[in-house]
Length: 128
Image (spheres, rainbow, N blue to C red):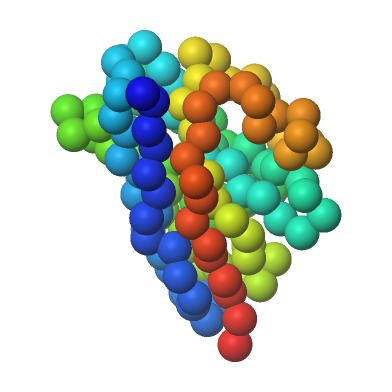
């Protein structure tokens, strides 16, 4: 059974940082690219970043270099470093695995949540 488990969310003040972690199990990690989505109010799902097995990373232009994806495939772990957070970053963040992610962007969650495998999500709240 494919399982993705996110951790590391929480509440931070504007300008703060968080590191999200994702533990993958139940599938061949090497067979998938990994990515991070977030679900914001209005039920929009934004693909923030992806990383391939050989470490090639892509990012949403909207992040303006504030987030960084990394992985440790020996440990079946994927990470998302969130820096310089602002209240607009408040969302539920999801780890996802897919054979291939499309371009980064934002869609209704109902349009993307059925593709690949998703974790249960971790809440990030940014407020003063």
